[in-house]
Image (tube, rainbow over all chains, first blue to last red; front, side, top):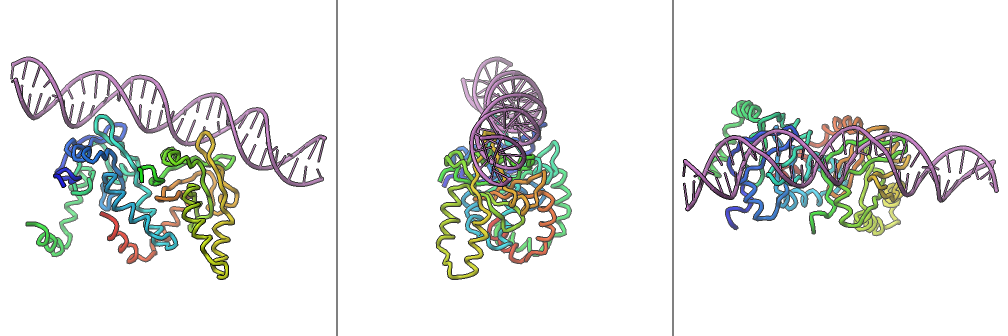
Length: 155
Length: 155
DNA sequence: GATAGTTACCCACAACTACCCACAACGTAA
DNA sequence: TTACGTTGTGGGTAGTTGTGGGTAACTATC
């Protein structure tokens, strides 16, 4: 139960090189190596960004749930397909970078700059520009809902 | 319970050559060789695609379940017939390809392009065009059920 | 048994990827 | 300041991967 049990916080600016690689912040890597978990599962985010889960988190929380869904049900099949289709297992190189897949780069509309945001149990990878406009739009979000959440969680 | 326990994720585009062979993604093959399980069982998918199970998965999960179904029930008989009738055991060649049978190619309406999708414990082989139109239709799927799943599983 | 069609196995090559090394920028400590 | 380690970025190379096609073995049919 140390601080380092895969809790990601903070925001970091990096570049994506010609080969589609992004750096994972050293801080994040350190909190992983403790778990000897040098691997991420990256996939489409619900927002226009890329999600990256440490392999252990993906396996225990997502994959397990997916495995338990019956394939007889068409809704289940569709859901599994959506979740897994864009997911890929990547580990970082000696320099601490992971390779992104073309589909995910397109989904997040990434080109040269990348913003990496710690989201507690996962990591988000954004195009900084997209994030800006996205947040503009998000201001029209239900303020009531937002405040309710804030009241519950912020201490 | 190692990393290599047959977890298929991701989407890969390949071609079907004149002899009806498709490539199995190298990533998938690697997670198999650990199991010395170089063989797949391919059969009709519930959707218009081909299912491919690693032999070990087919034997332990599907075959067992089919055996336990009573043949008194006509629905059971029909179901077993559908599952087994089109199933064939194939192993891949030195280049990592498997041969598809004519019936399955027709069922999935495959011609030149194939999209291989990891579905956790099995693999789906789609005609990319068919998948597109299929997903269009799928949007009319019960959104409520889908969202319930999403809320439970996505973290 | 001969012939035609099919299947299994092999080789070749282009494209890509993983792995490695190099180096500049930065921070830290003596 | 200087020396040293770490971090982020770029690029080269060797090995792997995907695709096409050739040849020999096998099957089936007459």
